[in-house]
Length: 442
Image 1 (cartoon, helix red, strand yellow):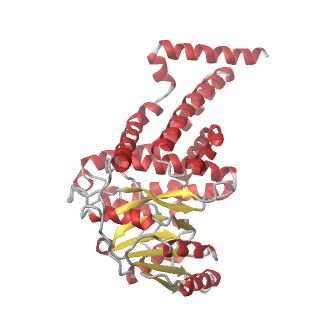
Image 2 (cartoon, one colour):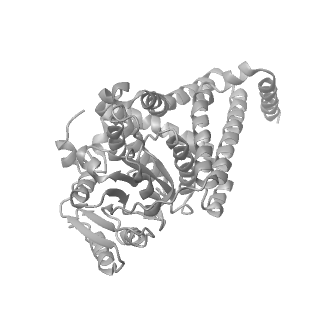
């Protein structure tokens, strides 16, 4: 009981110090919130700007209706691909939509191939055409996307995963952005479809809501989108062909985004918007093992692309000054250095101080982090949520999220070390080994 009283006393003393001494507050937070404060302000101001433009102002009506090609990358989804194709057939968009389901390794994925053929045969809608393209030998995600791009005829190309379905106004929300000739590409919004399946899918649903729906909406208002998701992105077809389509290795979505941004200095008016109201629904990893494997690939790929493949391109002469600074601070430093800073700080506190003090500091940090998290959650809910009831369901799981976020930071540390030591990007499940082996070494 005396130990508990000690912890309570230290917590109360720290709160008193925080209220009386700003220097103590800065010391306690160790770089983390001070470093992220400018990012928070960018996101908040951007979300407010988006809300004003789209919900307060009356947006102008668009009569721009180009042909749209939707490339679906299929591998082992089975009947799930049918819901993806159906969601694209049922789009409310009045223009023509060409749906290209590319089945990678169609021999070993006969169930997926047959499901796609059934969906194509069932399509009777006007202005809708379903093409099923089998790739008999597996070549990986990049070759699947490029095969679809090769036969696509639409002015706009939308890429989608076979385990992703869409709201029926998705295409209608995406197309008006491309009426602006300065938009070469666009990022789409994603939600977790299987949110109630496990604790981990609930955590990812919170992550997607705050980081993707909120974060990308805010950053896109200042043309600072870091990545166009591989599960849902849109591009001008001619521009995509001009830059060579998707490239081999792994993390093809971030790779393509980085290559597009290399044109920003030459075209200072170009921008990559985020279509907040164009919603895709994807299945998130259900088990801890699946989640960790996914993040090992994501975080390892990030280091590979930033520090091995594209490091010569990170210069203001290609990216432009604002994109260069943002990518340096919140691409390199936040995603690569910050996990190590958190780990070193945590170890240092544990080693240097008695457990009562460590426990007290942990409680305070948790409370501060949770308050910020709750603010962002409610802010995104009020400003952006188009599914208020569904998003309110996540509120009771919010107290667990800080632990999930810390754990993901530690997974990121391991992923980065794994890439440095073992070049783990060459073990990607996104392509077979014989494809990666023939790619250029970086």
